[in-house]
Image (cartoon, rainbow, N blue to C red; front, side, top):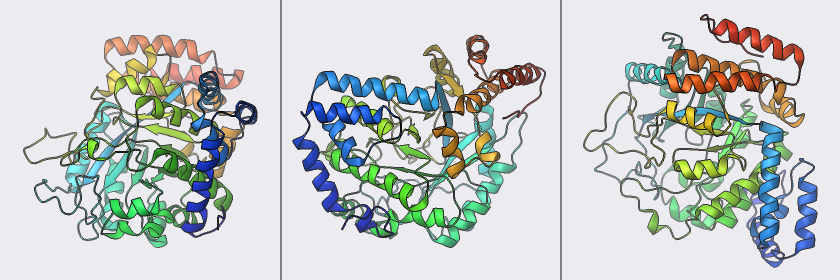
Length: 471
C-alpha cells in the first residue's frame, strides 16, 4: 500500500500507485480544464503532486504545452534567477564488483583498464581542476570494498580539501558513491562532504533486477532506502536522479517525484538536487540496445515539469548532453551544469591511453572557459559559489532560503564574487571582457542596497588579490 512516510521502499515507491498514476495521466492528457487547474496551482510556486505532474507530462495540447514551458521558465527565474552553478566530476577508481548492464565499469568487463588513483595522483588531479578554475567537485568511484573502501574515500576527500594551489581551492566536495551503511554515511558527514548523490537508475523493481543482475547494487530496497539512511546519519543535502532510457520514462519520472515527496514528508526536507542524465554510449554499451531512450523534446518536457513540481530543488545536467541540448533546457529549470569534464580515472592530468575507458562518452567537450563564456553570452551568471555549505545553510535551512525567494540577496552577490575570482585568476581575455560587463550589470539587480554596496566593495578588493568573500 502506498505510504509516502513509510521507511519501506515498496511503500513509498509503490508500483500500484505509479501504475494508477500513469493510467490517470493517460486518461486526462487532453483534459484542458484539469490541466489548466493544475497550472494555476503550480503558478503558486509551492509544487504539485506526482499525479498532477504526470498529467502535465502527458498533456498533448500544444497551447498548454507552451504554457507548461513558460511556467517552468518563470519558476526557475523566481527561485534560482539567471545563475548557473558549475562543477566537475573527479573519478577516483573504476574498480567495481557490480554487474550493471549499462555501465562499462561492471565486473564482467575484462578488457577495461582498471585504475585507482593514489593520494599523490588525487593531489595532482585536484591541482589540475583548480587550474581550470573549479571550486566544486563531484567525487565518483565504483563499488568495491577491497579497492575502494570507505577509508580510501575519506582519505581522498581530505586530500582534495587540503590542496591550496595559487589562488585555487576546492571548497565543496560532493560524493557519488554506492549505497552504504548509516555508520559510513556518518563518516562522510564528519569528513565535510557537500551533497551525497545516488541515482536510482530506474524505479521499476523488475527492470532494476534485470539491469543489476548481481552485486550489492542488485538489492533494490537497500539502494532505494539509502537516502533515508544518509539523512538519518546527519547528511543534510542529498541528490537523486534516474538514468532516463533504461526503463519507460513515464514510470521513472513518477517514481522520481514520489521519492522527492517521500524525503520531504519523512525527513522534513526534499532533495537538494535532482539529476536528469540520459543513457549514453560507452565501452561495450550501445544506447540502441535500450529501447526506452527518449528524444530531445521529451527530455525538455521532463525538465520543465520537474521544475514545476519541485520548484525548490537544484537541477543538474552534465556533459552527457550536447551544447545545443543544454542550451534548450537551461531556461526550463536547470541550475547546475558540469564543464570541462573528464569521465575517466586520472583524466585531468593524463591523455587517454589504449585500454582506458570513460564511464560515458562526453557530448559537450568544450573547456570550462568556453562554457563560462557561452553562459554569459546567453545572459546567465556562471557561479562557483559554495557559501551556503560553508555557512551551514544546508538541508532545511537552505530550502527556507530558496522557498522565501531571498536567494537574490544571498546567492546572486555570491555568484558575482566567485565569477570575479574566476575572471581574475583563470579566464582568457575575451571571457574576462564579457564577465566584467556582466558583473557591472548584474550588481545593480541585487535588491538589498546594503548588500549591493558591500558586494561592489568586495569585488573591487578581488581585483587587488583578495579572495573568498561571501554572504
